[in-house]
Length: 338
Image (cartoon, rainbow, N blue to C red):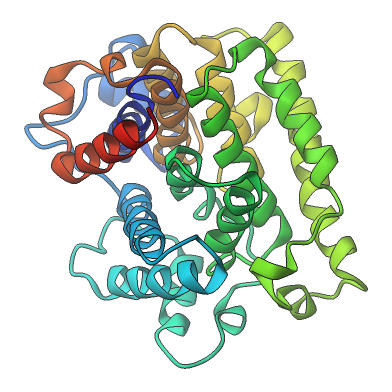
C-alpha cells in the first residue's frame, strides 16, 4: 500500500465533500458567479463543513472497526455494528447536511427488529451507497471476497438496487487498486475486467435473499443488471477521456452523479483528468452541475489513495470537520498495512 494511502484517501474524501458542499444543486454558471474561476476555488472556512457523505463514511469505518475487532469479517459481524452506526446517524442532531431520502427512509426502517433486507430500498440506486464505501478499499487484512461482499452489504443496507451494489463494489475496488499502486492509465481497464468477471456473481453469503424483493427471475439476473449499468458508464468514461476538454463540465460526459454508477464515473473522470494535480481534481469535481459534493468526495478519495496524505495542503487539512477521527482511522490502517 502507498505509504499514507488511507490517510490521503480519507482526507481527500472529506476535503472534496467540504469543497462541493456549497456548490451542490447549483449549475456551473452559478458556481462560477459565486466562487470565481474554478481553478482557484478555495475551501470554505474557517471550518470546512462536511456533508452526510463524510458522516456516513465514518459510520462505515466505525462499523468496520467494530466488526474486525470481533474476528474475521463476515456478514453478521459487519451488519450488526454497521446497522447500529446507521441508526445512530439517523437520530444524530448533526444529520442536517441535506441527506438523501433513500438513506433516511432505510435507516429509519433499520431502527427496528425487521431483517435488514426488508429495510433496504430495493429500487434505489442513488449515490448514497458508493460515496461512503472507501473504507472497504483501504482497510488492510481483507480477502477479495470479503472486500467485495462487505462493500455490497454496506450498500444494500440502504440502497438495494443491484447497480447500487455493483457501483459500491467497483468504487472500493478502484480505491484499493490505487492505494496498491495501480497506474491510473490502466485503472478503467482493470475495473471493466472486474465488472465482467463479477457480472453474474450474486454474493448470497453477504446479501441473503435480498434479490427476492425485486422482480428478477434469479439472483444472477438481478446482479447482472447492476454490473451492466456499470459497464455501460465505464464505456462512456473511456470515450470521454479520449476527447474531453477539462474546461467543460464533466457531468456532460458521464452524468450528474445523483445515481451510483454516474457518481463513480464522474468522480473517476475528474481524478483522471488531473492525476498529478489533486487540488484541480477536487476543484473540477466541485464545479459541476450535478451532485458536486459526492463527485468531489469520490475524486478526492481516488487522488488521496494514489498520492497519500501529502497530496493535501496542511492549511486545508487543519480546517476540515472531523479531522481528528479521519486522521485516526488513516493512521491505523496505514500502519497496519505496512
